Image 1 (cartoon, rainbow, N blue to C red):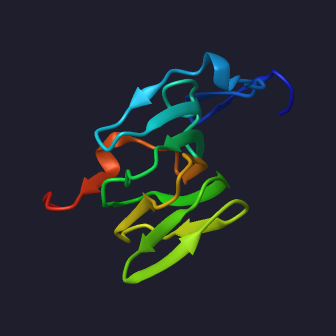
Image 2 (image 1 turned 180 degrees about the horizontal axis):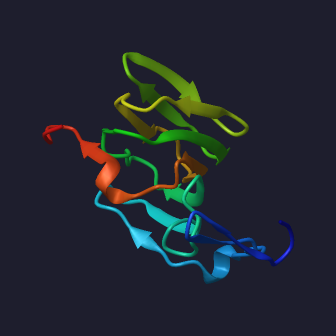
Length: 140
C-alpha cells in the first residue's frame, strides 16, 4: 500500500507514512573519536529496519574508530573535506563526491587528513543498531 496507509504483515504492522527529518532538528551524537553524528532516519527516529541515513562531521586530525559490523553494509558518501579511507587491507584517499562501499565484516576507518572538517553521509542496510558494531580489540 502507499501514502499513509498502515498494512499488516504476519501480525506485524508496518507504517507506510512519509518520514521527513530536517538535520537542524536531528539529535547530535558526540562520538569518542571526536565526530558529531546526526541520525536523520533510523531506528531511533522511526520504525525503519531495512536501511538508515545519518550525517557525520569529522574534524581535522580525527579518525573514525576502526570497527566492523556483523550484519550491516555501509556506504560513506563524502560531501566535503578530504581524508584517507581504509576498508579491510585497502587504503585510498577520498574527497567530495566519493562514495565508498563497506561490505559487512570488513574493518574500516576514515581519517581526516585535511584542514577542513569532513562532512559525510552514512547509509546502512539493515538500519544501524549499536549491537552490530565490533570495535577493534573487542570480541566477536
